[in-house]
Length: 263
Length: 249
Ligand SMILES: Nc1ncnc2c1ncn2[C@@H]1O[C@H](COP(=O)(O)OP(=O)(O)O)[C@@H](O)[C@H]1O
Ligand SMILES: [Mg+2]
Image (cartoon, rainbow over all chains, first blue to last red; front, side, top):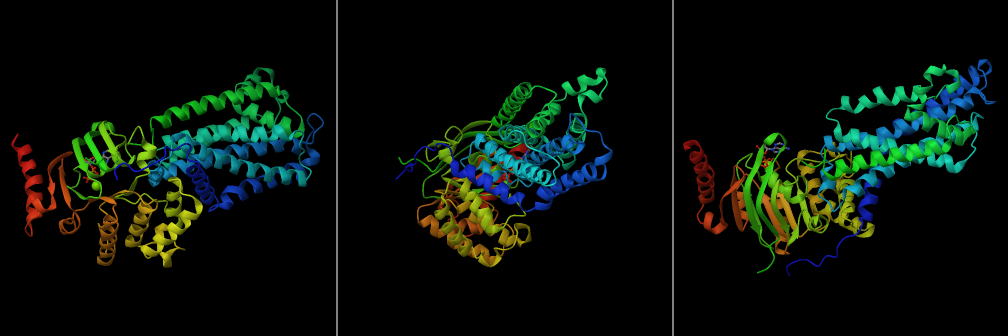
């Protein structure tokens, strides 16, 4: 016997499934950080803006202020969850070098990326559904369109899952890993209309929303939840798909060079 | 002639920032061999192994595993190789059975087969009493057992062990020697690096000595270690002579 009789391998589905199984198991080691933190922050928003301040706040387009804010709260939590999931999973596996377990196996880069993103979408969906259920339960939100709601959760979590992969590959320290949250994620979602409408801004500041990608995500999910949107859904969806394509292409290029993974 | 288990031809590996770890290395390991890969620290053994197993990209040269190109046909090639790395590359918060089971999953093993294989390996390496502990809670010897079990999970035809007995106690060393001898007799090809020359004399059939990223001596164990202590002599001459040669330039 010389060359072993091996059938050429197609997609390594078992391997892909194992990446997801491992990531989900690892995620469930820290359930408080992963699920309880975003749900409790949503509850606090409902309590403060819905109950305590509810009577004193003005309505926006016929909606209570809390109804207007909930989609923003939900989107901010999904963005953070998606980003932290992939960036910390990749960074930690590089830092402790157990990414090598995948490098020595018959896994393609595409399978690694898809596996990583699947967990991201699972985490974001569970996070988002939890917040939605809390919102519905306390009459703090509604749902206009399920398909759009699902689209926005999945699309936005893929975008930030991809961004997290980039940062996880690039980071050389835990400090660098946290930089994007501080300098991009938090400010851009606060300035992207989570808590205000374009009309509340003076005309000369409207560009600040149009130029902020987060505005389209927040606006999109707000349309799906309470039917209020300031930008056409079609435009938001098109821009979002473009961003997925651009980030996906970038991640693909880096992976196919082994950037940050293979010496 | 039969296809070799491993054929490395003119391998060169330059790390970023221009660090040349492997200069020009060629090596053939026949199927069924127990091959000793020796050399001083920093000679390029681990780097060679990393290029063979897919942890590092070779700068140039070719690597064939049972005739399959390790870069172009990486999927088929990697299925045939199991690696026990020199340094622990393990998720510290994972438990032994998960670590081994995930690795098997990456290799595409189905659930039922994987379960019985993991159980077998946990028994074989006496890890069963420690299944509830996370990797970081295990002692050094137990950690080594987990990494060995992980390397063997998909029953690879070529097993590469990078200093598997460094810092392990006498008992594990014996368990390991017996197990490796057994699976080698079953037809598995083994490539072993070690700084314990008596271990190499005891186990290996063929030996290559590497220094500064090149093979400086190659032959059968019997040629190099015909009499007691002669492997050590051969090793010192091969690696030391090279140093004198360099110093004399
Ligand atoms: N990841 C790396 N980046 C840069 N240089 C490295 C890396 N790994 C090893 N080296 C260098 O390559 C050389 C060979 O190292 P190595 O292959 O680990 O030798 P050995 O396993 O024979 O002790 C050494 O000079 C080492 O410092
Ligand atoms: Mg080494």
